[in-house]
Image (cartoon, rainbow, N blue to C red; front, top):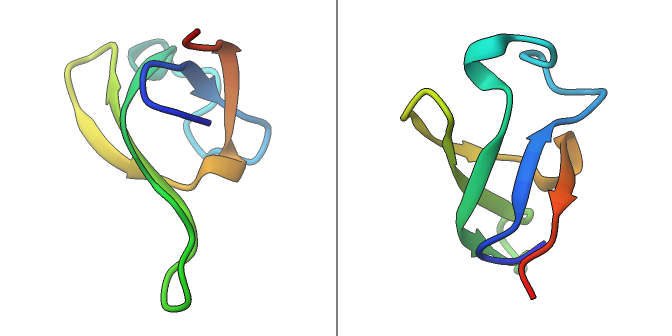
Length: 64
């Protein structure tokens, strides 16, 4: 996962299937380090910006 990827909530995401959380754009990716797991900051189609767990997201279209 990287900045610019188009994502949607995956199978494990609690908001999967909600129209206001249909897709989003990864605007920052925070790789795993010794203290924290990896995370992605996503701007969703409703305008919200959220910190998300990458494993809970599904990549729709990768940034090239």
